[in-house]
Image (cartoon, rainbow, N blue to C red; front, side, top):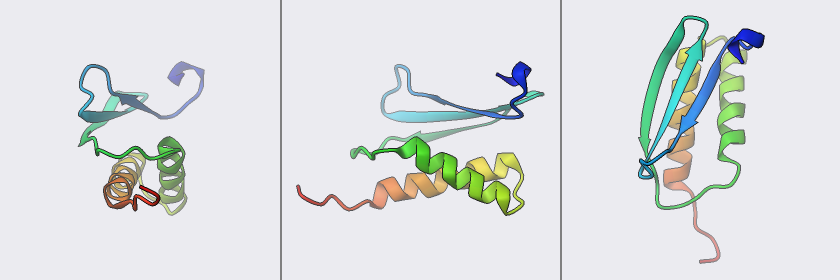
Length: 88
């Protein structure tokens, strides 16, 4: 995808480590950063949409891609951790 014109790719890896999420940001120069988060016990619908929207908002406000990816991940992680469990 990078060779086709994408400037950055944020790849999500769960693999055999189902208790953690690993997100790796790649650019032209290779791996830029990698963050690992503990998985929460609760699932959250459309989490990748929320992450993408948060990154886009931070980029639009002038943050560098690596920092925008990190801050957006923190936002999503905290939202998952604090989400209400209605109807249970």
